[in-house]
Image 1: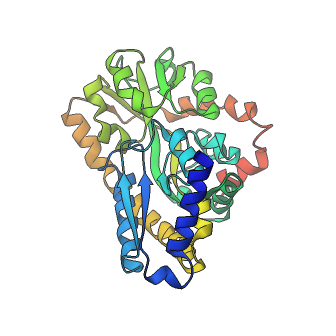
Image 2: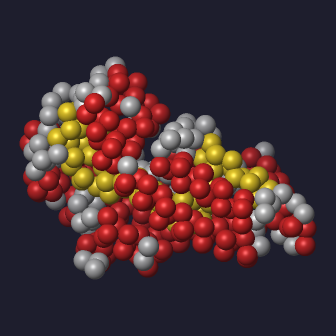
Length: 328
């Protein structure tokens, strides 16, 4: 039944978007995310939707579905994209290794020096190859948007050095590299779908979590007892804008080029608004009673997590990791 529905949807997309009838027929697409409407994901998504509507003279309309409306978690929504039930998705890399293992190379700790380094890699041939790898599993990678550098939070104590974080039970994404890195540092990482995290924090099932500033702020995790925020910047998290390959392939070439071009254009916009807002969000968090620890000993975390690189050499050759680290 599901296969028949997907095939039927694809036929409708072909009728709506291809051939001479394209100018007369309108198509509506869904763009999903696990995060709220005020998160930079969805601010970027709205910009993307507006530009596509404008540039197709209203022929293609994209409707936004934030806050996990189209799935219990990012993995489920990725499966929806594979099947063609969801046309577009902006997601963290958390579940993506299960679809395209090469993407997990971006999840090594302290891989990127700064945002300039990030942009050089994400917008260059390395980033494009990682996006193209998704085509093997019926997903089209349009562009790398941004979640941001991830930071450690917890309800128990202020953390400046890696040794002060030992023993904390923290939620992580469903990601083997992340899990191994935190175990190496002496913490107890627990993979958990994002929709379950707030309640788990409230009920003290876990002590903390790790996420970029925008996610912490948008979710108001201080209301779940997360009063200690350490600016560890231990991992950079890109956020791919993904599209159903079935839908993409059914579109005429000019629309394919438009979606690719617009996705890349909005990436620069989305990253900028995310980065520009971080300081104000940190100030908001301080006003809400969060102790923001800025003078973190990042070298102690880097040293504690270093063994993870050797642990995954069978999957990610040293030469590939060094190509990212040494990009100039």
